[in-house]
Length: 159
Image 1 (cartoon, rainbow, N blue to C red):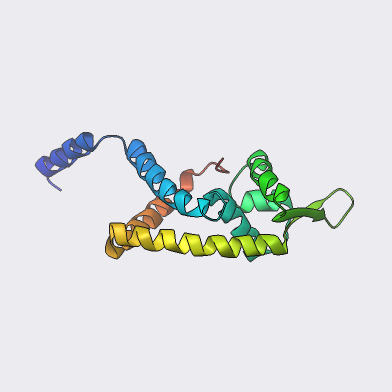
Image 2: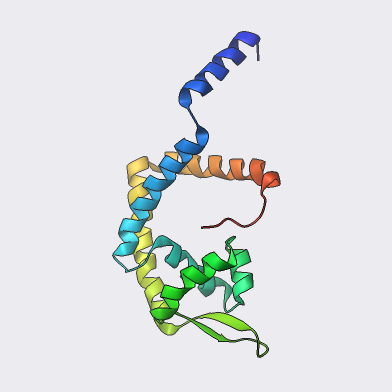
């Protein structure tokens, strides 16, 4: 790349603004889109993710679940409470007297299936709004970016 092209690229990047801000704006809009559909099933998207994770990986200790979902234990506890109160998740006895296991109930399986239908609607609407090619390109760009940034990960995300 010659000096003129490099300077032009740098100037263009400055005009584009803060990448963090742009990504947060996009994430808020995408999250809102999914949240509207999930609300029809009586769930938040984070609750749907939690139900799905427990369904796919089976009963597990809360600490394992928090690590697997890359969230803090306190965030997991906060997110589990309404699901437990609704009867969709239960904390069952673990392998010893001091441990607990997060278990999806039959009602939780039914709620997750209801929400899966809403999630599919949200995904198909997003595909139509953005275009399948753009969604695929976005996924590829996100995956590549995550791989490039993975060495700087510091630990659990706090959702």
